[in-house]
Every structure is written in structure tokens, then in C-alpha cells.
Length: 115
Image (cartoon, rainbow, N blue to C red; front, top):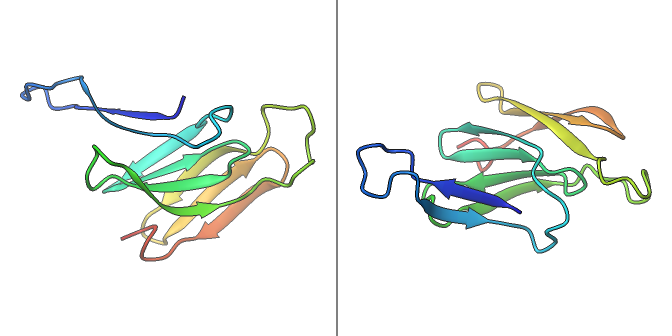
């Protein structure tokens, strides 16, 4: 579970080898969708909300922003609940979230989420 980062440079000697990883403490919830812009990775993470990682050094991805979309007890017994879809508007510094319980959410980012 979690995120694994692989080398994507065909000219590199480590092409398609794992160069980094990131995961939550609770491995029962997985990443659902993601977008990459520049050095940032934006993820919808089911009951673990929205996460933004800094990939400046892909060998050590670092969480720089988080928003909890989950309402505790809103979908008891359902694994597939919470933040499922994500899109970003870099120019406006916005993160659009499709949440199965709360519907469409629009988050306004800052200089940390959108450097």
C-alpha cells in the first residue's frame, strides 16, 4: 500500500527501479486518484482526505499539506467512502475534490501547496 516512486528516465541506469516511497501509518486506506504538477503530488485518499506531497527529492517524498474531508461515522462499514476524485487548477491554486459523502469540495491552496 502507499505510494511507490520509480525512475522514469530510460537513459538512466536505474530505469524503472524504485527510488522512493511514502505511506500513511494506517495502511488500510489507499490512494484513490492523484495529479502531479511541478514538484507537487496531489492525492485523494478516501477516508484520509486530501494530501499534497513535495517530490523535490523523489527518494524522500514529504507531506506538505493535508485536508480532512472525512466525517467520522458518516458511512459506517464502508471502505469506499470519502475523497475519491481530485483535480487541480494550478493558475487559481485550487484543488477540486469529489467526496462520496460531502459532494464537490473546492479547496483554495497556498504557496506551500502550489509553489
